[in-house]
Length: 166
Image 1 (tube, rainbow, N blue to C red):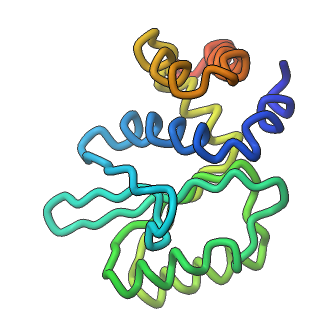
Image 2: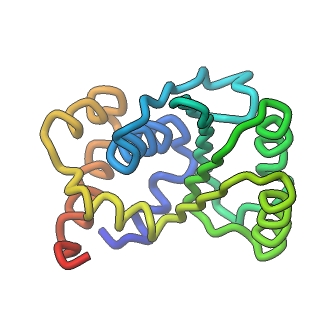
């Protein structure tokens, strides 16, 4: 299965994508303990963490088309109201140029940090952290039994990429 086929399978599977993002947050930011928010009425965030004076929100978007400003504007409005320092966006699609430009301006003006991970970045994270442990994958398989092939294919694609030299 190609990366594009995997991407197509994950789209529309918001719950599965959020679980994958949670796994990656633990790998990329081991010093933080992220909390997964309820699926509805989450205040514009899927995950949050607080460590000392730093407040972080993460949002997972499994949209088909480019992510536009209107797709994530609520997250940034709420982040400003709640004095969030860092916003992390995981997206299966790229952000539109206008969205990136306007979010960058927002972050500069409001002294916020923004990190955006698109699908290619997500595959790289999986490879870099060797996300293939039986424990991690079995958790995903138990929660999403209908997506076992997809989880295995994402894992195999990540393992086939060599990031040891990074």
